[in-house]
Length: 246
Image 1 (cartoon, one colour):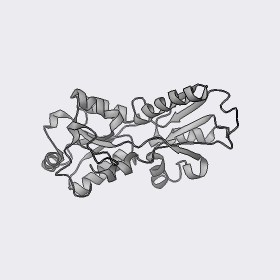
Image 2 (cartoon, rainbow, N blue to C red):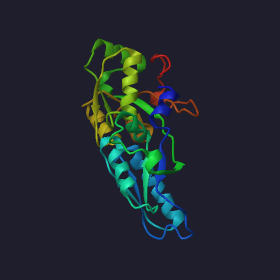
Image 3 (cartoon, one colour):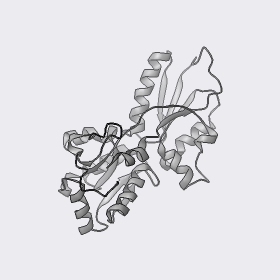
Image 4 (cartoon, rainbow, N blue to C red):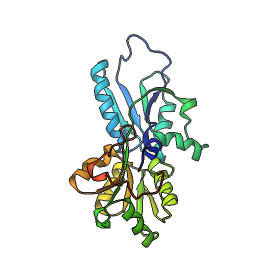
């Protein structure tokens, strides 16, 4: 997968909050950091790293709270309803942006209801497969999918999420038929089912799936870091043979 998909998938992750003004004594009490997915997701990992450093630097506890569901929408809505005092922060992802386009009636519009603070991280995505598929690269995966239409299952963190959109784009560009399996709990839950062999493949944030590639539980089929253009994993340097421009 080339850097364009990595950008679409997760490069817009940002920390947003409703803070009217910064006072000299902020924070004077614990601060919550809410993310919209479940344990083991990239949001979980980033929130905990961020909370630990902010607690050290600012002298107050920063408490991480996962609110999974509706492709990150439940967490966003909870923060939008919180007091406008800067003590409830939201770690958003590109899912929150796509929600506005896909389900505008129910999605929280971050641009209107919350205030952006900073870009926290960019995370490359990796196309990973279960080892039982017996494929070594994207080209072999496409050949297998063409030979078995609607028999390979790809997981995502929800309808309209970056992994879902990446999978749908892959289907169109590669000319294959795959079955989508959404998980409300986040990328950690999808990774668990991939390891167990209940699904065939997933487009996953590197922060979630890289340890499982290293252990051999899953196999990286393709993925590159958009800044360095280098493989995000030694076992994922198999982008050749994939759809042109993907």
